[in-house]
Image 1 (cartoon, rainbow, N blue to C red):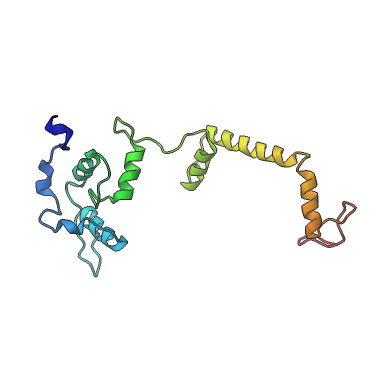
Image 2: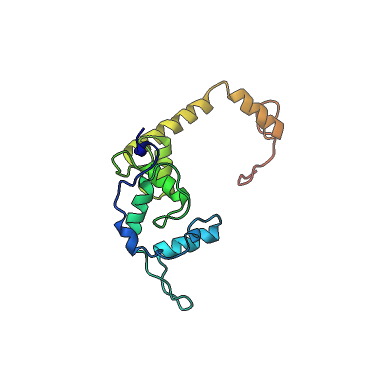
Length: 178
């Protein structure tokens, strides 16, 4: 068996490590477990703006190379690399296809695609609008079905909105006049 089958060898250059902002720092600072530690480690990588009480710090000049190096390692990698935590990198890996090109998270023309348009406050594309219209129509058809009407009448009767003869029982609903 060859040595390559037992060990992982980086496929990207590591020359950038000489210029990293974290060079010379304690590596345990970047293998973090709490939210506060993650924020501190990300601050070193991503930089922080200067405020009246905080001098801030510039972003790491090799953050992108650090992230690519981390993403080239097979399997999960612990700690903060390239300004990203484990969860961030899982999301990045999920969004990439084998060519390394980012792709959209949702399929257009689906109900989920329409919901994501709404979530991110973007104008829904026509295929997503059509998918949502189909779902709404199916819901209306299903609830208009004769088999659901007796169940609805029974429910309304139980809560006292409809009397036994099928009409309103004389009570005035909010917003109505007598």
